[in-house]
Length: 466
Image (cartoon, rainbow, N blue to C red; front, side, top):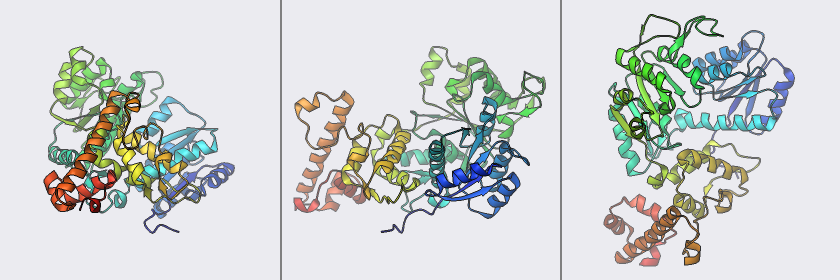
C-alpha cells in the first residue's frame, strides 16, 4: 500500500574527486534518496543549476575549487539545500567558516558510512521542512513563515512577531532551549522590510570565546597569528539585513562592551584596525538564561541589556502549548525518510495522548528527536506507545493508584492530575448537554474542532453520553 500524501524523494548530491568515495556514499544512501555524483566543483554547479538538490555532501579538497567555494555557490543557486562538508583536514577555523556560511554540518574523514548516512538523513529532514511548499499542511496552521501552531498562546505570539517585524527595533527572544528561538528570528526577518537582504546567524555558545570577536567584527591582515588576509565580520556580512546572535548571554564581558558600542554608534571596528566602518544592521538576540538576574550579579552588562530591552519576546515552552504537540509531531514525521519498507501514516491515539501528557523539558527539539526515534523503531503503519522513548510514556494509562502516584515527581503528578480532571470535565460537560458536541464546546468556551480534538485525545465518545 502506498501513501498518496508521502513526500517526494529527496535528491542528494555527493561531490568528491575520489571515485571510491562517490561509489560508497551512493551505495549507503541509495535506499533513502536519489543520489547524484560529481568529481569536480564545476560539475557540481551544473547539477545544482539543473536538478532539485536537497542535500549536498561535498569534499573540502578538490582540484578545481574547494568545498567552501562550492558551499558559497550552492547557497546562491539552491538556498534551501542543506550542505555537509567532508574533510580530512579538520580544524576549528574550517568548521567555523563552513558553518558561518550556512553549512548544516561537517564530517571528518575517515568516518563510519552509517554515521555519515545519519547526518545526511537529518539534513534531508531539515531541507524538507524548509521547503516553501511543505511549510504548511494547508490547514491554516502556519501562523508564521515556517512555523506551525494551533494553540492560542502561539497565535497571540505570532501576531506580536508580525507587529514587531514591521519596525527596525532590536529584538530579544527569551525562551528555554529547544523552543524555536531561531525559527522566530527567521520569521521576524522574512516579515521585515529587510527580507530581501541577508539573514546572518551565529551561536555565541558554539564558537570559542577567543574566536567569537573576530567572527562578529572581522579582522585585518596580520592582526593575530593566522590572519593572512583581511576578513569582514558578521556585522558587515549582514549589512542592510539582519544579524541574529543566539545565546548572547554566553558572550564574555569585554565583547559585550564592544557590541554595545557597535549598537550605539552603528559602526564597527575590525580587529587590528583603527578606523570605524558604518553598518546598517537589524539585531535580533536570543538566550535561554535569566538575563535580568545576570545583570544583577554583573555577569551581563547593564548598558547592553538596556540596548536589547527594546522589544522582548518570550517563546513559551511546549508544556504551555500542548495543543500544538500533535500538529508538530505529525509535521516532523513527514520529514523523516521511510526506513526500509516501512510506511508511517501517523500515530495511535494512545501515542498522541502520551505525547500530550509529557512535559518535554527539551521542548520542540526533544519532540522532533522523539518522533525521529519512533520512526526508526516502528514496525507498523502507525507509531504506538512502545515506539516512543520510555520517559514519554511514563504517565500513559488511565487511573493511577496511590502507590504508583507516590513514585512520580511533583511535576509528573500534577500532569497526571490535570489529565484525569480534564477527562472527568469533558464527560460531565457532554452529559450535561446530552452528547451534543456543539453545545458542549460552546459551554467550554473552545472551538468545535478543538473540542473534538480533546475528545479524541482522552478517548471519549460523544454517543456514549446521549
